[in-house]
Length: 129
Image (cartoon, rainbow, N blue to C red):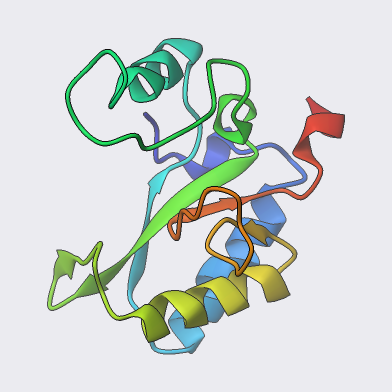
């Protein structure tokens, strides 16, 4: 899985750039952990919790994820120099609010079918693939 912002779709990149700046301006240290994924990488993630050990982390099969088209990112806050996947809900809520204000769809938003705090994607991304 890539963390290269240059692999993002041209419609996604400016929103992500604005998001990263706004999060930093809010005093939150955050890194992008995933941008684009191959279908092979997506298949491995999809198998987790199904045919492979671990918890289910995605419901998207290969070709069904915005990541497969460079239209999604995953992020994590950094606390005391370390990725903090279980940080306080208030931090995630602030990151989510900022992402949404930058025009991104956030999977941690209330009412999300499959809550996934780290995931942000281009709204209606399917129409651009």
